Image (cartoon, rainbow, N blue to C red):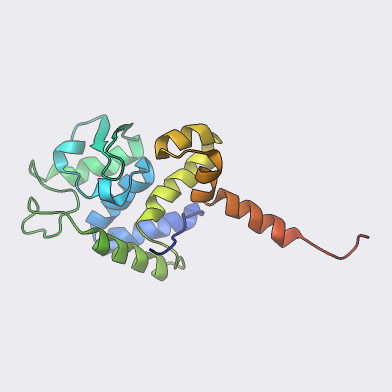
Length: 187
């Protein structure tokens, strides 16, 4: 398994969004759900139109943990989901593998990874992958609210250090301090 990074720059985040929109809108929708929910890609891909259409919350049973999770649909996420879902029929996957048969199966996690990896490479972020969506959510959530305990709950992590390492905050601090380390000018 490759280690992936969160997107730390809003500019880069918007670049990735624009690239995905132009590449294929379904991957853009997948990405938006990921960065606004913190869900794993394995919980995003099975979502169908009726899971989000005219809803205030998205409810899923997490594949990895088996736990139920409910989260409010952010207004910005709702603004992209509504027009996307408008022409869809009930039962269609939001990210279908085959647009000719959208009720058959969703895109595979492998294909989702390949698309995000390419988006990252083409936008100067070679460490991008499917888990980057979840990490990006966590990174910006922490930067905005500074509430590691709440983020631990969202991610089902056992310790603050796990959460901070996971979203790259711990590494940012280490990089900053290492970059400012100097052996000149003091005894």
